[in-house]
Image 1 (cartoon, one colour):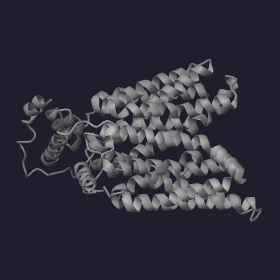
Image 2 (cartoon, helix red, strand yellow):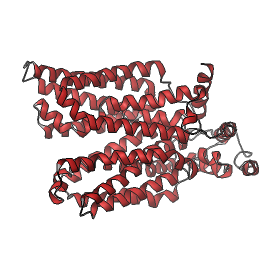
Image 3 (cartoon, helix red, strand yellow):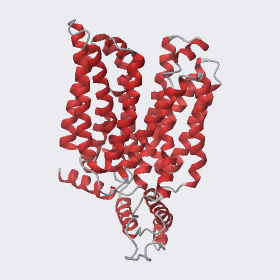
Image 4 (cartoon, one colour):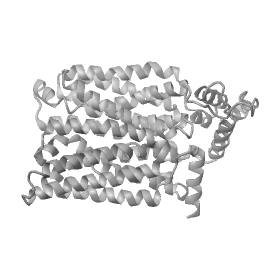
Length: 472
């Protein structure tokens, strides 16, 4: 590795630095836009996998003669597979590359969709869903990490937030197609974005930072030049990536256990903490069981679901547009306050029902509460924890740290989605008051611990966090 690095240090791009050439592209290069669009096709697959179980429930249960318990297994096994994929995601992305990790994930997803399409028994449904889960567990790490590593600092937030926007689009389009198509056809349609990304991956560059990490410095510089545009001067950025990577290469690769050191303390606290608070704020309980929430509140489930989709996509888009203008931290604070208010309104509506007060108003209050929650979550809490996760970890621990953070996210997702119905049976108002309290704590957590990463290079962010932890 060291020999390769020294032999590659004479990259032709660096000595030919000309200060007359502009130091960054005036507009976003087409190659960067196309490369990002190929990457976030994986996010669309992620969303379609999550959305698949809702519109297909009655058709699958009828055609394969499944009971509710069997279908619940089918729905939840996706999360189990995602946890398995999360455990190995960092290692695969570190050793084979971010691009290869996306390719592996799509092979898992294609097999899973085909297994569901042609299944005659419940066991094949479970196998297919498990494989799709493994695939999206890989994608949930590889896509935001790759996009963050290929984009310049002034665009990184918005481009990385496209991950969440495409998840939202995947879910919404799957709901729409599922309303008209048979569940087997819907599963077959699910293979299309997988195949498109798989076919496009050989034509996009690998991450310049990953290439530098494995000692392929000439390829790193070439990839960076391709992503920034042929007329851009990449000298400063390439030198910064090279120097930073070489400094961290002197440290050993950290295992998940090795992450629990003082120098990584703040990065780990921020990354893991945001994922726990994102999930325990109730998102998967509300998304997975929105229909039952509206029924319990005495509101039309069809109108409520349409209203949720109508709010979610525009607010996610707004979050993408604001990411690099307002900053991550301020957007997170607004989002967390909004989710707290939304859950409080929903809790209040259920409490009024329990006391038989304002019976005509409480269903509307529940709808408003859920819509405020979904809109607020979509503008910040949905995307930003993944953006920050992709920014804060040094290159020598990024694989292990990313695996841990992604695993925690999926584990918390499973806990909330499994426990939600039991909590609602215990107390609907109590459930939402609990979510509201967690969202209120999120406001404090963001205000005290989460750094602003807007307008800073990955190297600057990671160096500042490491120096903060070393002073503790």
